[in-house]
Amino acid sequence: MKAIPTQPGRRFLSALGFLILTCTATLFAQSAAFISFDAPDAAKGELHGTTATCISVSGIIAGNYSDTTAHSHGFLRDLSGKITEFDVSGIFEPVVTGVNSRGQVVGYGIGSNALIHGFLRNVDGSSSVIDPPSSIETVLTAINDSGQIAGWYEDHSQFAHSFLRDASGSFTIFDDPDAVQGVQLGTTARAINARGAIAGSYVDKNTGIVQAFIRDTQGNFTNFVPTSDTVSVYPTGINLSGEVTGYYFTDALGPEHAFVRDSAGNVTLIDKTVAKDTLTLGINDGGTIFGQWDLGFGYVEGFRRDASGKMTGISIPNNRGTRPLAINNKGRITGSYASQDSTYHGFVE
Image (cartoon, rainbow, N blue to C red):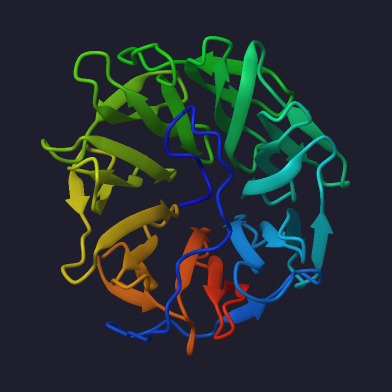
């Protein structure tokens, strides 16, 4: 799950930190070969550090770090491990949400007008603010290797609409056919695959439930909920086969439950009996899923689920919480963990 607002109209930037309490729990065989890294100017201590939020097919990693004044900046980690820190002209407190194999980075942040705007950072280090026509606030959620960008925006009536922006800069604006249009309601694109198919959420005009949609490359919509008692659902990933991951609620106050939906429409629920919350946060083209379990008392552990259904825990040794946030087609997972001094560090395995 990346740092993406779950509802239109909530003007917030995701905190890079997470609740952490001293605890160690290993319920599955753990993954090996973790590489830890930090942005050079990342501060140390509670609510400071480095968070890797996305990884490209080739293995380029991008994310955020916080400085000694607790302000957020972006970073890019290349295939050699070199980290380049960056800020975005016209954007304050950037939140990085996607990177492709060319090294293009997308995200969102606060503009000079105190509203949220999207941004694209190019390979040469230049950047531009990305806002569809008639938008007042914009969130870019993902970019693929073709340079296609998915996201959503609010118009002047505060209605939410989604878009696909191609590599030339042209926008295709769309709404789910069953989406209600109203203040802080509408359609929010959340994930994109290599061909440009998009998964996201919308508020259904008939039921008022937040449902999931898949928009294929021809513009056709498939809508679904994981279970009959779902009250809201948020897709987090879509792969080349059209498999979709995400999490859902059966009660407005929680807990969160995880799922994967295959291309035929079959839904598999992925909950852990001892976990307070379970989230699937993405899927690669080989069908490997990753996510997080909240095991209680603020302790979060990651997991990997391969295409056969085998589960493997992801937990950095001697940590105070491990949060995987992205996976690529090679099965490499990146994210963040907290060391014993409560500093966040990036990792890749």
